[in-house]
Length: 223
Ligand code: DX5
Ligand code: ZN
Image (cartoon, rainbow, N blue to C red):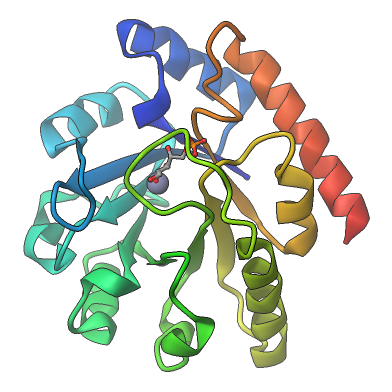
């Protein structure tokens, strides 16, 4: 599945981008929310998000790069199929917060920064619907893959089958033609398309999506 990181869209032509994403059959719109504290930058408040939500049928995939996201959880509306992901590193009471995300009607997502080990999530892993491996450090588009993350995706996929769990594995950061085959081969189910592989200057979105799907096929064949 492809989740389109809307902060990387062409904001001068947002409507065209939305229609192209819908036509090409991407699965989610990925909304990056940044608080200037958990990460340095600011991004996408709910007034902007709700405007986009009102103008597309694509399901929401919220990525809260926010310290103690529980404080602002009520600002988000759980539309059909929406995922809301919070960071391991941002929650003092992670288990409680994941339960609250689910109780509010979202699929519960957990995001791990590159430095966070998989051991850290042992006691919450059976509460989550999606685990996102950050393949760059969060906060900015256009960064390079942290190469150790390919092993981490693979380890998470092995852990999932060992525990017989059904959560999805998502990857976020530098998802491009060079990296998609290895990410998918390692076990990624959902790819967050950003500035490196989806919203590429001078290239139509439809072409990017065809190229991404070709790379996904290569990765699946490597499994
Ligand atoms: C990174 C964001 C991503 C970003 C990835 O902090 O969470 O969603 O848009 O896009 P790239 O790495 O391709 O620019
Ligand atoms: Zn993101």
